[in-house]
Amino acid sequence: MILDSTIGGPDIISEAKLTFFQKLKLVQAAFCDEISPETWGAIEKLNSLRNQMAHQVESPRIPKLISEIVTILKLKIEDHVSIASTRECQIELVAMSLILTYNDLIKLKERLPAKFA
Image (cartoon, rainbow, N blue to C red; front, side, top):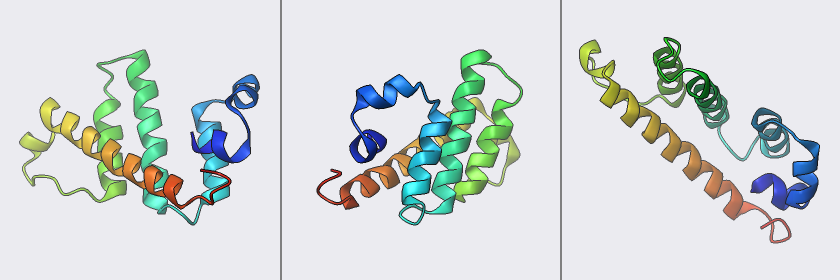
């Protein structure tokens, strides 16, 4: 949405067949100072998590990716490893991470000059 609004119509972007990561890097290059480095890093890790889950839902790499997202966003979690490592807690952590990053992207979109919005 941000890329389509700032660079060109969605048809032109889709013709390029860019990956999400490539699109993310274009938006980050254009607006790197508008969003915290933590949010950019979390978006990259969330994309890696999505890719991993698309190939193997029960991948052993998933808990590590979630842990990296939590660390990047400095989310507070229970000190008890037994709680933090439960599937339910991990789902909630991913949901919180998505909400935080989405919120930052919406704020960015709202701050775009009128010609981009």
